Amino acid sequence: MFTLAEVCAEIKISRSTFYDWRAKGLAPECSKIPNGELRVSREDLDAWWEARKVAA
Image (tube, rainbow, N blue to C red; front, top):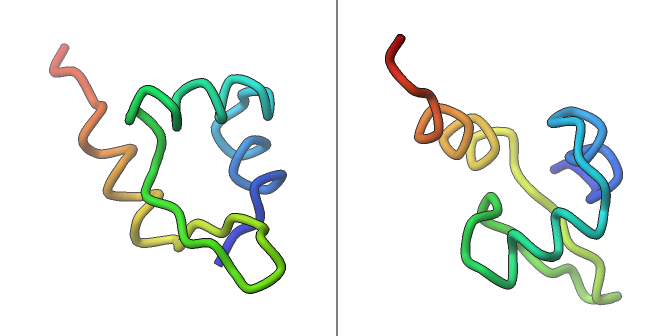
């Protein structure tokens, strides 16, 4: 499971952009752990990325 900082670094966006996308339903699927922090699994991040590929 990736932290939010790790996800943002991997897809090269800011934390505020991630939260904006999440509010709009555009971010990868997240899980909230007991302390309230968000985590994203590798599978969910890869699936999200694949869904956004555009055929050239």
